[in-house]
Image 1: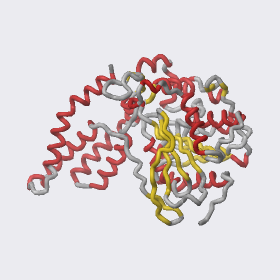
Image 2: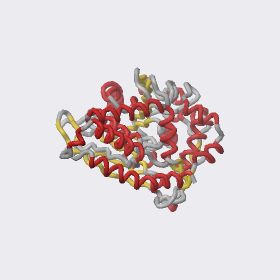
Image 3: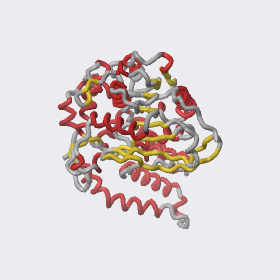
Length: 414
């Protein structure tokens, strides 16, 4: 019912939005003298802010057309190398770099409300030094019911299948939520002596053990039963979406949670946008819209995956307690011996508290000390761990160096 009301709300706003957009265009006409007055600029700014906060935000593009490799610009082409019902494995192919023998790197993007494009900065920083692949998750509302369910167990299976697709000797980065299924997949592969087990895994800002430094989202999961989550936030996808009648955790509900955690900051940002538009400060206005085009673009999550994640990761703490199972098989992290482990945390992370990701080291006692690393980045919050200046200048070089150290294949120079 809630999802249907949400769709009805957007449908009802369409005529209003059409009038607003027409008026906005009229106020931008350069040959009308009144458009240069303070009153016209104020009205235009207000209409644009209204448009921004009421429109739908589609999936953004990665937009990474080029990269620099050893000082030489290279064309980048996005290609789906494997397509599964709930995810595409996307490869960023760099023109003319086939003979470099750069490490293959799988970036596992979060399936937690935002699209994989949220990791655009992560991919961009890794492209000059790696053959980069990323999990491009599909909005659950676009997956027909005939494709079946998707659970946390399926998530782990997908990761294992992606490693097989990349071949032996790959590396993996799990950003935030994927840290748990990545660690589980590597543990299960290690126990099976799978030849495709990655050479290194980097876990960044992930909820390995949420009993450590619990945050507001962690506490929310503890305060309510799994039945409460099922009854309060799970909805059926309405028409006309391809996933009609699929049970999902809707992206708009997730976004509401994101926004209310820092409501004052978001309101203030839109007030500043209003003033930037009045002043004609196009650069500041563009920076705002670029950020919110990404931040407000959200996707639905499969209900079974969402509920299983809440219970397994945030309520039962199954992985650190040694009781997590996948397809009935217990996840034993002590089986990991060959895969190097790097953990990265942000000092001001309010999603995954300090120490939650580093806990992975305690779960993997059989990884040699020489194949371990940990980095606590001062002055950054959750998103600063994998995006922004600190990521580019301080974190990414450490991740690249760690991967190179444990790759086993020296770079071929042409």
